[in-house]
Length: 224
Image (cartoon, rainbow, N blue to C red; front, top):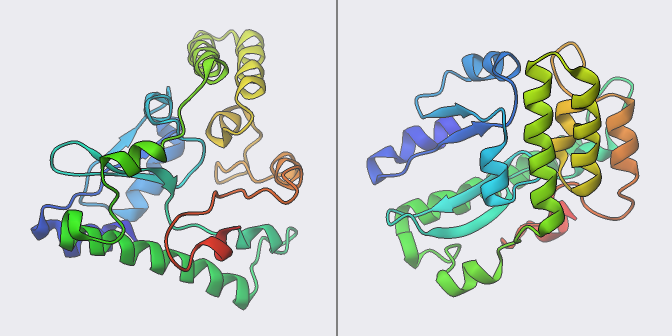
């Protein structure tokens, strides 16, 4: 999705930059499989999540040529349709796949419109509107990221028990952050945290969304 968008719009001074909030060995196979021609970064210490208050993947921030945020961090084209998949086979129904694809198409079309029209795009916020939609971190979230970085440091030094305690403290202080939670969660053979722990955490959301709804026409109901 992102490679196609980048390739078709780079002549319009549009660039995709992806950031994997993971360990290099976990992110590398996915990057190599995608064969991107745009910059791909690996942020093992979650500096980007800390700076932009990102809590899940995929999330995106739109930044213009002047370095101004046009749209603050938001769900980048994913839906909650996966919550109703067959959990034994991890297979989605044709209807769920269609919903997922529809959400991606609408979001990508909005990005394309902005890349072509700039500030004239209906999807671009002015400075005041973008500022009003920022979700700023509080003191607990700042402490959570400090615990997370400490946990990463301890883990590199082989102090796994202390690292685990700090990962747990980070998740406790910032329970909305799935990016923090994943780093200490059990992974499957492909390196994804999609086991029983994950589904229990998803179920605990109740009626709350996993992917926050995006303020783009046609996406509110699809992501709720």
